[in-house]
Image 1 (tube, rainbow, N blue to C red):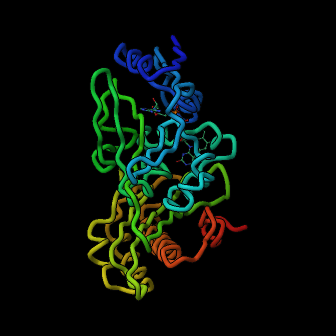
Image 2 (cartoon, protein in one colour):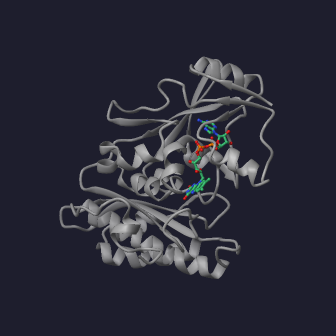
Length: 299
Ligand SMILES: Cc1cc2nc3c(=O)[nH]c(=O)nc-3n(C[C@H](O)[C@H](O)[C@H](O)COP(=O)(O)OP(=O)(O)OC[C@H]3O[C@@H](n4cnc5c(N)ncnc54)[C@H](O)[C@@H]3O)c2cc1C
């Protein structure tokens, strides 16, 4: 096995073009190999020392998150916590402090798991990924990135360099919740993210909802914005909960049956919407919502 420790983006892209696989925190790649899920690739390029991959920047109203930004940084970065709170909720739930200190947003998104926690909030916030290869850069919407469990539409020689979030409007809020059986080192049984924009009278103008662990990829709830428009938050939570259970196509595994998941995703979607609308209305619900509102595992 060969390992290149890269210090520049050019070095990484050259190594990828020659067949290497990127490794960031290694919390999926190395742990998966140790668990026997897949052997380590013959050739790896470490990207954690590449300058510029670990920054969170505001650029022309958008926010550009480097793929190497860790979950610890995301959950405490003031810009993310204030404007993209659902993403901070998700980052704060991942693994343990040591997993969050090395695990990255790029690794989470590019690993393509249907149980990834940052995926649903990123989808509701309208994120796109910027993929770089030698001589080429392109932006891909997240709905076009994930193609199946552990699969993405990125080519093997492409590196995710940034995750880009559009500006959020006034009177908007977001939240991510997950059903979990314990309070750390857990994988979402199901999870839901919501983003909403409120009118002056507190009714919903528009919004998006996305779901974790109920389909082969993270999926957006179809028709959510139209269904919520003009409703009060309480009415909308009921409607969205029913739609989520209806659209979910989960599997049964050791964490839950398909029927249990279909029921609980309705509950989680309604709770995510409730928290997002309360935040949009100015209520300061601390990150992560799971702990603040007592959702998931008991104290
Ligand atoms: C104990 C434990 C608990 C965990 N808990 C959770 C949890 O609660 N929620 C959750 O969602 N995940 C969880 N995970 C999974 C993992 O920590 C996250 O998915 C993490 O974000 C992966 O990031 P990484 O930097 O470690 O990725 P790596 O393992 O380095 O890489 C993962 C994959 O992405 C590719 N990759 C990495 N960076 C890039 C890039 N910039 N461009 C293109 N491809 C790239 C790699 O080649 C590899 O295929 C847990 C893992 C462990 C070990």
